[in-house]
Image 1 (cartoon, rainbow, N blue to C red):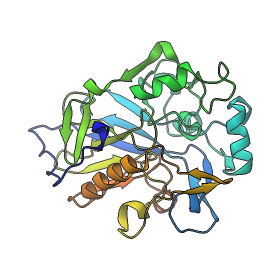
Image 2: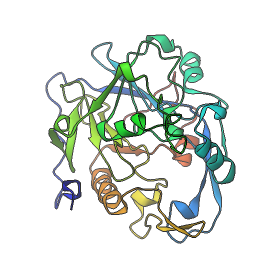
Image 3: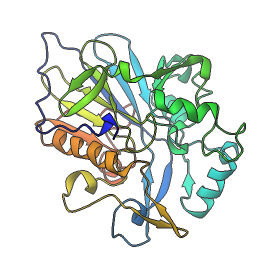
Image 4: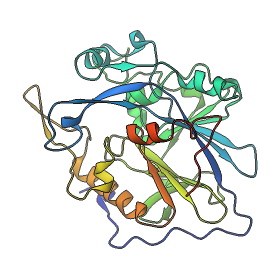
Length: 306
């Protein structure tokens, strides 16, 4: 049994801010919409579709010019996706991109060429976007995802992953040794800037290399957790009676998470996190959060700390 299954019996509190504690200012970015079949996300749901955003985020350091974008959402050019993904989109998860991450940056006053870092939660099609406008950015991904690039499309015509999801020469792969910090309920975290302002969290249940972001959002104790595809429905975080779906699709066993056991552990840790004071959690496909915050949280606006 993999060490990833290590769980936390009782979650410690998040660390108190240091003197002159730097924090992160976070803004949401429009990055397209995807229709998610609810029965594939939540056990016992009927086959209905929910139109959900594929959210990205601009995360800016309070005390320096350090910044990064978390995820790039969907790409408008569906024809550049692997054929297996194009088939998947047409049959199961229709998508649309009224505004790409690049366009969201420009609308919010950011030149895509000025972005220095991009962290990708994982290499699924609705998170990689189009990296080409971000020509000066370095990319950070979970190291377990590297195999999807080396064995990606078009070299492997049957792959679900694009070999050029990120520019290889500008990509850093986080190894397990990089996740050397524990914080709150999370045993594997990477202090991204080394000052306690923002952490990359190892959450491998959804897929290989999947990571989340835990960021301070004020100098006095507010936090936000950017959950990527940790879960595809917020009820999995907030309702103890709701479970991830393990079902069948086209007569075959199916789950939206590659490791349902580990996914439940990852979700359980976030359930513990959101019980702590002044913590907000936003999942990549949180349609209600996006609707409730559409007038304030999207660049050039910002997410108001708790």
